[in-house]
Length: 128
Image (cartoon, rainbow, N blue to C red; front, side, top):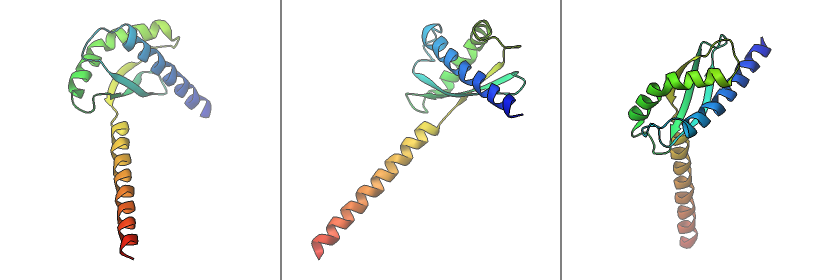
């Protein structure tokens, strides 16, 4: 069972690399612009693949990006079948990954809390 899991992970990683290259070099849709593929999860039967992406422009315009990705999905699926030797080419499902954006927000909150704590510490030292 573990071997099947690792194969699905390897195929998902290969698909992520190939899709990233295809999006960068072959797809000319301006809606797809500045995106980065974060992960690809492939079902054990290789029938479906969830492709997680993040946008360099943030959450705005995600609907437009999704429309462009869905429009290009037939081309991407066909090209993946040519590049990766698996039994069947999976149906691609694109999902916006907000984890990078959320991580940046949490990091900013932590930095703000540290800064406020340092300011409070300095003011209490000056009072003593």
